[in-house]
Image (tube, rainbow over all chains, first blue to last red; front, side, top):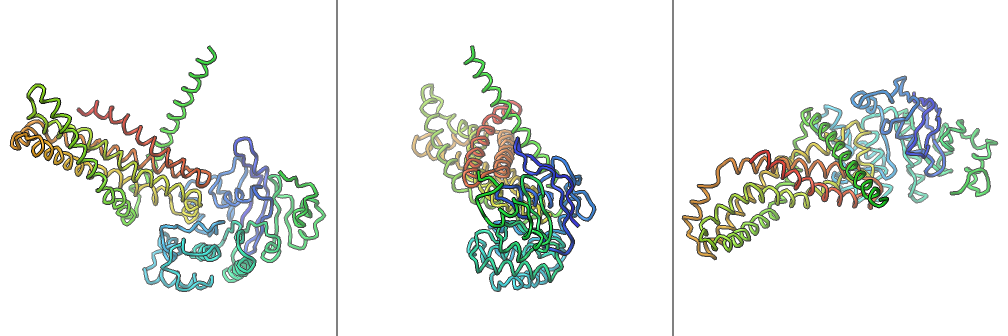
Length: 248
Length: 259
């Protein structure tokens, strides 16, 4: 489904991705863990073509997207939905217009049909009667839910989540995790989640990959990761300040 | 010697970065041209921007135009009176407004009002990942965000210039005829005799160029903003400064070519 081969990316003299190899399975949730500022978001942006690698290949269904022009890349992007860290709702539009945006862009549906889908998607994330609200009027958790409704509006095959639970209270974190699990099951989605919330990782992930110093140092089932003998992973999961991960 | 070479080095670097920046803005312009003619037209976005750039700028443009015309009449009168040519005040105001001050002052006011807002809005969209969200949804950000703003700039600045020209001449008439007692008939006759349509048209062509410059630079700076609230603030300031400088420099060359 998604395959990264020897992906390198540097910004100036700082190397962020240093030969990433990763295969993401269809219909599963893969969580990518790693340190803050360790390149997880950069990796996610490569998967959806917002950034191009300095070298290496990124395959989506056997198409190398690093080589595509904008038009072909846009065709591939229609398979994707993405929930951004701060939801990235268009603040000049109402909630309803936000969720309707991809539908208006890419489908020939009539207005009443679009309105029906919008309210259905919002209901699926537990929101009703918020269509006319502006994003600024919503709480952080609500914005993320609207972001998720917008991300799945076009029935994508793949949904990317950039730190979906960062900055939320424990109850809302659990609610968002449930929502990710339910949405993944219902639409049989391939999900890629970036997170460093340890509890959430094991709750939602079918597969877990750890990015460290620009490389994927481990990739396996939650149990394999939990019992890993790798000192980096052990330190990361325990949150200890003693170990190979240096605090800078 | 070292100080001189360091100064030259700094000057060279500043020039290079200005030229590089202009090159990137030109590339953005080409991209805008390419996306402008690709359907769908997104008329709603375009009219929304036209309202923001045009309709909502009328008040400041009326105010600056009127007072500029008034002060020109006042200054001109004192100068012309020395050799008894007060009758030329009207035509001086009209020529000055239509050829030069109408387009330039309008463009500078719209830069301050709308160019800065374009940079701030797009900059905020950039740092809050809204522009990335557009790309992810396979919607081209240039088509959605920049094309409507550039079109609004190119069409609305000339229209605002017409308003500014009119108000300037009216302000000049008020000061010249009502306060300084110049004969109303002579005031108007000299305007119609010395100002031809070419003066007005060329002024409007200039205004369209300025509209393109201010909207393109505002969008470019916002689109490439980095680094949170501070980055957006920096982008906004840079947009206004760069657009104002570029308008004034290009004004000279446009004038040299057209008149």
